[in-house]
Image (cartoon, rainbow, N blue to C red; front, top):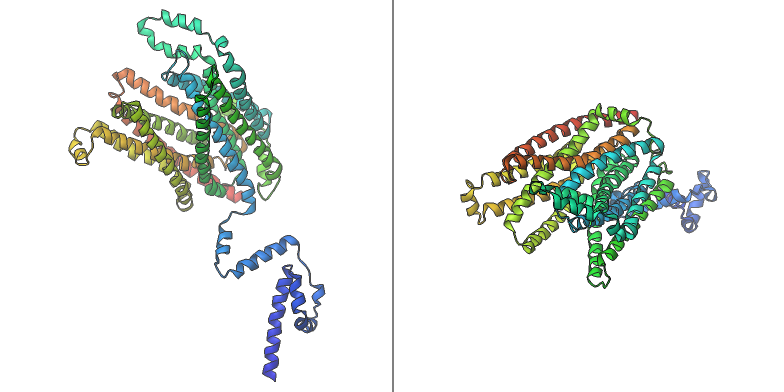
Length: 571
């Protein structure tokens, strides 16, 4: 009898525990099922089942989810899936950020394709105009914009600056398609420039390309504005805002994944451009390109409006949620910078942190420019037929997209297991190794002929393949590691360094790197007579630039680690 009583009591205790747990989780019907055996024991413990507290719905739902997870067993599939999902606060912040990045790059891809068509096919123009545009128009425009942006930052908040600048870009591209381009013949000084070109002596025939910029000045302005969209809206406004609201640990997880959205944006924008091109082929209008330009700029304007809508959503729903964005970050984003232009320049010049960041950006621009030009010279020699050249570039683009997607996924692992410093060294190391192999094939192709013949190819074709691999690996590592590293480096800085330092590094550093590489090549060609003859000197310059890049990356890693430790101590 005593053993039977003990067993009965033990069973009732188990029923009591189960009923209480289910009741606390909001399952009142469980109490109705088990109330008869539980009531005596509840009374014995001084408890009334009807008086047991009912939790708030949010807590009840949380306990229900935990009970469901426990029902899956330890380490069940649902529990593992929920463990891998980001917290709701992070999803609320990262999802609109990723959508903003997608639409910004959707518009940028359309602009990047359109600007080349305009300036290359313009009357009296050609591809030779592009180096002059980058050096003598884009670079001064970027410097002028940096001064203007510094003034804006002193007068207005970040929200006002973001909205105003993106709206200005949208208005310009819409105005260009619907007003400026249809009246280009009246706006361009074609007759005057033609007279100057006709009067030039043969020795000054090279001035025809700079004069083409004057002849088609509205196209040159469009080209510069399209370039500034990449430097300003992508690098400065978007990443500046993302760095304000994102923690370093979050950035390590999500910044590489933003690159996946970038590749998807490239695919969709390419489909849209091809769709518009198909309409142009079947158009019966007097100027089919004018109609296509309106559709293309309409797509850019629509994407820009979506970006503004997402930005306003984040201001109202995300920036006001302390679980998404710390109040200190919100205060910092609304703070207007106080230093003037001269004081800012002196501050940035005296900041080793900003100097190292600028060095990284400039060295990348110069390095990739040097290798790309030398590779494309070999590519033209290997594929003189335009159809063969185009077919090879199609395969090259497909490989670049595939490798970039893989590197985006690998980038998360590199950040997680090896840290910021190792990730920052991947791109220059990749450029050094592949650049050394590429230039060795060019410079020592004769001595390597037996080895190359054994591989069943020629030194020229091997140089083309290695150069393609070099460009693919360099660009994929740039998109997946170099860009996230650069953006993470701004996060621990104060508002002044983030705003004006980022403007100086991104808006000036990017075109300065490209223009610096172009100027270096021009100087070498004028000195030795041809690009082929200047190859050994360009190879030497490449290795010096990469050495400076590696040194700056190591120095910045030390400063970044110290800044993060200081931020952690303050927190």
